[in-house]
Length: 539
Image (cartoon, rainbow, N blue to C red):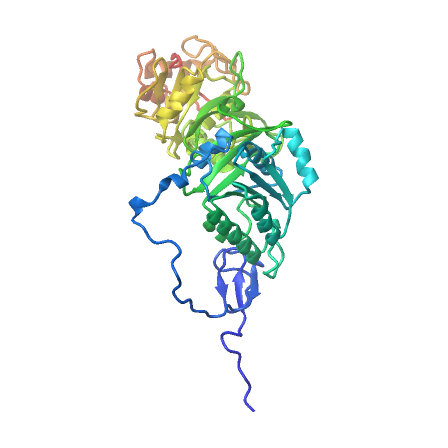
C-alpha cells in the first residue's frame, strides 16, 4: 500500500527569531545572523490571493497632499526634540531602546507629563510595573497632570480598548516586549508576538493620527532585542546610552524618517528625575588652577554637536612581567595603537615596561579617531611627568606612520573650544577659519606634537632635570661626564636656537651625532627625550 506524502502546505518550516531567515529544516545556528539556538518551527502559511478592493482614499498628486498634518509638535523636552527633528509628528511611531536601569521609563514618563495638556491627552501603558509603582516615580520627578492617564496592561486587546476610551494624542507603551496578543501563539517578546503587537499599534497610530512611543529591550551586546522587523516597521529608532555609574545619558538617533540621524541629546540623571543638558561640556572637564601631568583635552563630535572632553593617563612602574593596560571610556585598541606610535615614531621607549591606565572624565566614551592626538599627548605627558600647557586642546587622527591626519568638523570643534575659554589648539594641516583670539598650531606628525611638552620638570625614572645649561649640563651624575658632553656637542653641532624648523628639530632629536660617532646610545631605563634642547614650547 503506497504511503501518503505530506504536501508542501503541511510540511513544517523553520525560521530564525532574530533575523527572520527561513529554512526547510532545523539548524542549531542561523547561517544569516550567526545566532545560536534561534531556529524555531512554525506552521507554513496558507497560500491566499487578494482580490482588488474598494479604494478608501483617492490618489492625489504629491503637490496637492496637505503637509500640515505632519507638523511636529514639541514634547516639552528640548533635548529630545533636537534628536526627533523638532518634536513628535502625529501618527509617528518611535522606538526607544536601552539597557536596563539607564532611565528609559523615567524619561518617557517625564515626556508624557509635559506633552499632556488641554486638548492633548496622554496614555501611559506599563506592562512591567504596577500602576502604584509608576505613580511613586511620577511623584518623585513631578510628572503629574490631569490629562495624563495611566494603565497597567499586558493584553493587546485591552490596550486597544483603552485607546477607544481615552482617545489620546500620545501613547507610551513600556515595553513592547511585555504586551501579547491572544490571537497569536507564543510567549510575550517572541518574534510572532512582537510583530503582531507592533503592527496593531502602528495601524492604530496611523489611523488616529496618534504619536506612539515604544520602549524596547536590548541584548547583552547592546542591540535591540527581537526581530529586526521591528526596527523596519517604526518611523524613528532612538538609542538611550549611558553608564549607570555616571550622570550623563545620551539619546542617539539611529533611524529617523522625519529628520537627521546624526543628532544627539544629552541628559543628566539625578535623584529628582532626568533633565536635559544644553551645555554638557562641563560634565567632561576637571577645572584646575594648575595643569597636571597626564591630562589632555580634545573636542569630540557627538552627531553634529561638539563636546569638549578630557583624556587622562597614568603610568607607573610595573610589578609584574606583563604590564597592565587598563582603559575606561576609551577603546583599548586605539590606546594600544597610540602606545606603539609613541614608542616607534616618538622615540619613547619607557612605556613598554610600565603599567598604563587611561580614562575619560564624566563617563563619556570617545571612539572617533579625532581623539588620537589627545590620547598620545596624555600618555607622553604621563610618561615624562610633565604637564601640557594650560588651555590647550588637541584634535587629530594619528596614523601608524606617525602622521597627524585631518578630521571632519575642525572649525566647529575650534569654535566650541574657543567658546569655553581655550586659547591654544593643536590641529592637522589646513584647519580652515580659526576663531579670533585663538592660537592654532598645525602639526604634521607626532614628533611635532610632542614639542608642546615644556621643559623644567624632572621626568622621574631616568633622573633627568629640565635645566637650561648648554653642552649636556643639567643632567644626572651619569650625564655630566663624557657622555653628557658628547651629547651636548652633538646637539650643538645639529643646530640650536629658536629659529629652527620643526623638521630640523626632529632631526636634531632623533638622528645620531655626526661630530661624535662614539657617543653611546641612551639606556633603556633613561627617561625619553620628549623635547628639543635649547628650544621653547610653541606656546
